[in-house]
Length: 120
Image 1 (tube, one colour):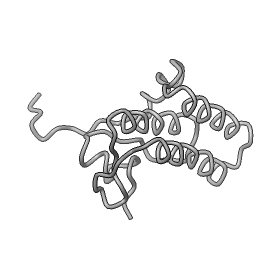
Image 2 (cartoon, rainbow, N blue to C red):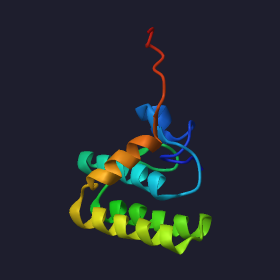
Image 3 (cartoon, helix red, strand yellow):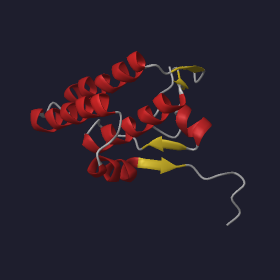
Image 4 (cartoon, one colour):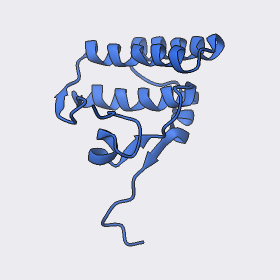
């Protein structure tokens, strides 16, 4: 099973040229995931764990976003951080946009893969 958003071998890295930097699901990585979830939701499709295109409806958007809270609690176990994560996830599900502070944080955790055609 391939990771969809995180890591150099993720579906996003291979197909989109961007991925979430690997590590524990802290607030920055959650913000980066939410940024990509919102992108998928707006365009109407995402990837499954085999990197096939699948429809991204509101139910899948909400499920994937809420799963980030579960991962935070499993990986970090720090209630203060994961409570912040949960607040952010709830806000993004409700408003369908990242707050500005979270957008700035997300950018720090998104990695662009070099293009094979970039000769600079």
